[in-house]
Amino acid sequence: MRLIPLSVWYRAAVAMFEERGMNSLVNDNLVDSVLSLGYLTVGLTGLLTSFAYSAWVRLNHADAALVATAGFFAGYMMCNVVMKLVSSAVATVFVCYGECPDTLQVGRVEGFGFLCRSLVGWRE
Image 1 (tube, rainbow, N blue to C red):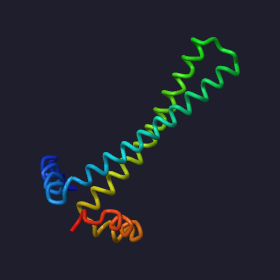
Image 2: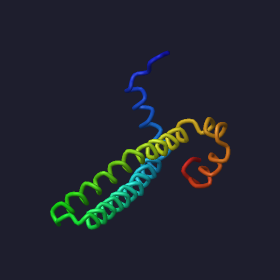
Image 3: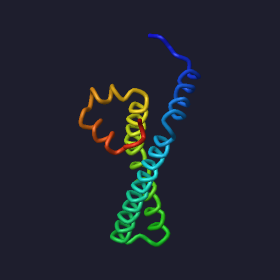
């Protein structure tokens, strides 16, 4: 296996973004923003569930607040861990599409067509 220095990959990535535009970075950032809404939604669901449990077992207000806060952070962090996988997959598809679109076309014909229709004007 031949190892390529990181500086070579960095220069190639910068050249690709200069050549094809910064749309892929913007799209990746939008995906992360949408996923952040998912983190908050799952965190709030954990908070409400924990608070309902606290009311059901009749905890005092301080303990109920502590349990609800723990429920929020537990839900937020669990969703964060799972959605990082989704975020990485989206970033990988964008980089693969920018670097070598023919490989993506051979492996996933339907996905390639959908991506091309979605990103009209990005690649000329």
